Length: 30
Image (cartoon, rainbow, N blue to C red):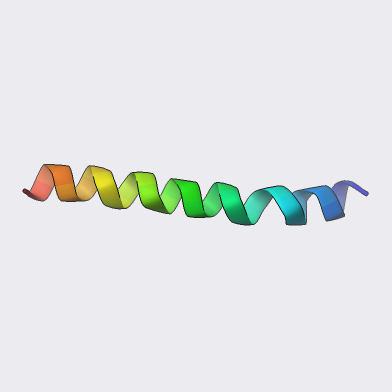
């Protein structure tokens, strides 16, 4: 159960983190 829950929660979370990092980097580099 917890493994399935992690499988459902982790991918969107990682996408969110990647979006946040890319936005932060573009703001710093711009």
